[in-house]
Length: 258
Image (tube, rainbow, N blue to C red):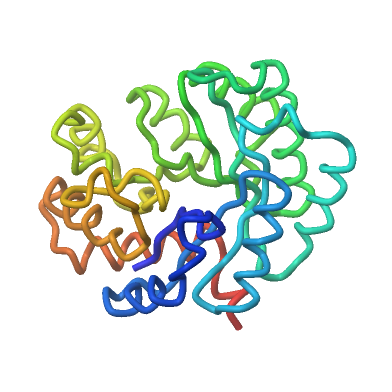
């Protein structure tokens, strides 16, 4: 299995990252994709990926942090994107729930990320909250379908999910599907094709049941996979194999891991 979205650079993992990765191996979690949220975390994730073959890096500026982006940031991201262990551009996207950055600033930065992804031939890791109409509009205008990617921790409408699938994107399934108050989301994933779903933790956030409210970690992705297997009436092995194949296809891990 592969945790397709985590933040191993977070301070919550500073003291016991090696033990966390050991628990991944115990739970048959082979790889973790660790995603940047700003320039410094992108660099840290790249460094982690060079230190441990279980980790791959995605680089980008989260929509919350886009008010800090300038030309220097963009140039440094371009340089980082050429590193072998960088397999995606992100976490990028739009978040109109908190609006820590103005929507127009977020939109401009999102377009910059998509253009970098197209320039480098890398898929996108996208965050979307309360911004589905603008998400679809920008994906279409910037021809993001040329590189594809994943809408991580997807929790949007069915119409948005289908539009993203039509653009060639995958959808990230998080521990939210194990929560009691997310039955509509679970019902949606039960209808969507397994060939386009990834499992993720978003560690250290969004811990699944029975760890809700505690620090999340990549080995807990098995709980999301178990719930997805239940929703799909499949074996855990089938979910593990299919989601692993999906991640390998999207991020071309075989090319990187030679």
